[in-house]
Structure formats: structure tokens, C-alpha cells
Image (cartoon, rainbow, N blue to C red; front, side, top):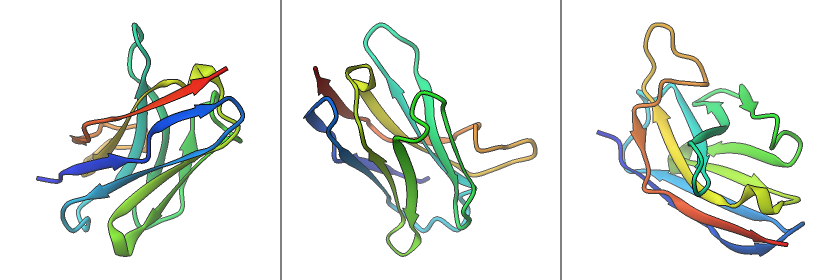
Length: 124
């Protein structure tokens, strides 16, 4: 069982930056990928970004490409989401997720473990 704890959310003005962190509670040798998702009020959860654990492959949704960067610190079992040029439409609860990988897995999922979420609010 992998427990994920997000941090770094908050209130920021449009054009500003935030960095989210997600720490895994246990060794991550069996993790295939880590991802970030978000859910705005009244909307479905959507994919934001993902990274291959132990590798360099990354993918991003079109809405954040060029503004957000996902990265990992394997020694700290932590994944980060650097968010720049934030827009009001980025306002959402952001969730970290971990995939243990299986036949057919990709960076898009499926994801097996989820954090509790951290609120990001971007004011105009």
C-alpha cells in the first residue's frame, strides 16, 4: 500500500507560480508512473501530467503544456508539479496518483493510489 501526501497548494494571482509536491510513504521500487490530476467544482477529474518513475518520459495535457513541469526526486520518493503562468481556469483540487503498472499500462493510467488532494486557487 502506497500512501501519497500532497502539499504546496494555495492562493495565487493570475500569472503567478506554485510548486506542488507529492511524497510517497514507502519505497517506490514497484511504481511504474506518477501522475497529477485535477478536479474543478462541477467538473470531472482530468489528467494534467505524468512521469515515468525512474525514467524521463513525461506527458502533459494540452491545457498545461508549456506552463507546467512534472519532475521527480527518486531519493526523496517525491514527485513535483511546477506550475507557471497560472490562469484562473487552473483553479481546482490537484491530486497526485501512483501507478504500479500492469499489462497495458501507460502514463495515462490506470492509477492505483491517490493522495487526498491540495487546493489551488488562481485569482484574476
